[in-house]
Image 1 (tube, rainbow, N blue to C red):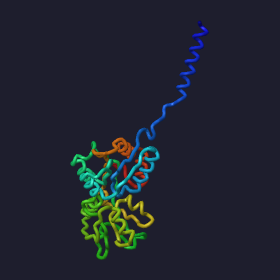
Image 2 (image 1 turned 60 degrees about the vertical axis):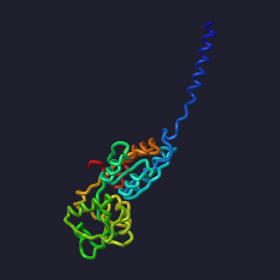
Image 3 (image 1 turned 90 degrees about the horizontal axis):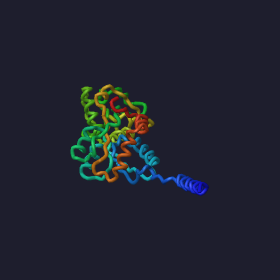
Image 4 (image 1 turned 60 degrees about the horizontal axis):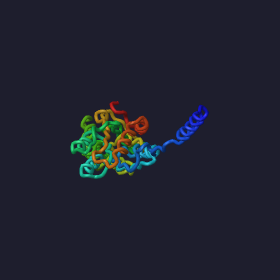
Length: 258
């Protein structure tokens, strides 16, 4: 009898061992899959594009699609029903219009800050040393429209410096203002430091003290009507992670509260 029970026990051990050797298949990307649409400020183009590729690599079942433009234009589209999962704005005021319309799923989180610089052609041929030089006769300046975060920040900085000027063009996002410098259509433009850094091979950046009076906080939020809430939350978490923070810092963004 003892030998019989010993044989049965041995057989049971073998069966259990066989079961243990067959692991349950893991869901690709920890369950994060499907498309996620991110509306983001134009100044986030390079950094978010990079983070999107890294996110897809970490979550093979997910695909990230971006719409980059002026924050105010994106907010309007969201409030008019445009399908999106995540919104990253270049100012709390712009984000507030989305939250006030009931289109934010929870409270937005600030993930970065940005400051203005004067972008000039390489070599600074106009010898622009600060905001006052932008008001010199004959100096052509591009600004963002005031309803756009970079335009509101420019107005704050100019007022702080006591400088009054008439720009030759008002652009709908910071990339439009920077393009005018790159194309040689203006002598200078007020843009974010990160945009000037990204275009360092074509433009120089002139720092000015009044930019400290016009620092923009960047908030991000999952949208209430997100079609892929799980992936949206995962992407926001990725932006807020150490890897996201490292990518933002490398691009010239400041940490929240800095």
